[in-house]
Length: 331
Ligand SMILES: Nc1ncnc2c1ncn2[C@@H]1O[C@H](COP(=O)(O)OP(=O)(O)OP(=O)(O)O)[C@@H](O)[C@H]1O
Ligand code: SF4
Ligand SMILES: [Mg+2]
Image (cartoon, rainbow, N blue to C red; front, side, top):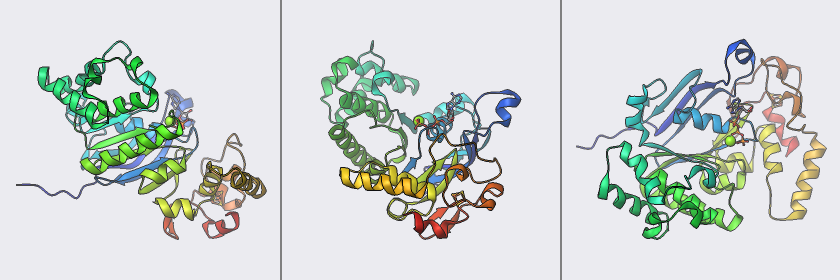
């Protein structure tokens, strides 16, 4: 009998992640500060934000590579946050990752086949069956089956990223964390790899946590998006709503900074952004009790420094801003 489940494929609740130890680390703002979201089977959630906003840290906490200070990570409804390594390894096959840089994530001394059978060995799949699955995974990402006999140096960047995707797929996972998987590739290769990811997701019903700083790339693959700033969720909603009609000043700044193919439009956006007076990434430290965007926000008032705005429904998305109603003036 098939058991129907309504649990999200992946769900994180009130996640807090800190780096370092001791009093200094405890007093520093966390790298991830109270983030919650859920991803359904077959769905892609885009996680966007500028460098240092905590995107990869969320990925690391989900994968068990860095322990959260608080909050939970659930896979198919099961809390995996505090599981022992032994118990967690049973779930590891369901949750795999593709990193940005296929050069450093593949061992140059091993053939592709040797790299791909490694995670299978940990699941008890060995010998001819493991090699057959490695070959099938390589073929599923559009490479010839005999690629298993070659070394990473014999492939282009785009082909290596296909190999990294094959390595993630070989265990037949349900959830993939994709941390900037196309950022290191040229534009035409990016499009091919994004199309491949979309096909694989739809074919296998995979859930993707898709980390990217490029909103255009997110728009291509994701149905929903979470906008992160200094480890906190600024805005979340359907990808069209958030990118076409952003409700948070930071999302407006982010969409204005996103590259567009036409240089004239790019210049106009830059001028508009400068006219609105958005501060730069290195702006002063915000007060820990208020909105983290205060030092850069043209709409900031006194309340913003003392009260952290909760996420609330504004327009079609959830937004953490006291003055979301005035964001029209920035668009
Ligand atoms: N190993 C670490 N030790 C200490 N601090 C770290 C470590 N890794 C990340 N951080 C800090 O945590 C914060 C979030 O970093 P994270 O790598 O998650 O950002 P990101 O959004 O993935 O950025 P990028 O787009 O550059 O990859 C940053 O302030 C960063 O300096
Ligand atoms: S809460 Fe205030 S500082 Fe924060 S984004 Fe909104 S207007 Fe700007
Ligand atoms: Mg990162």
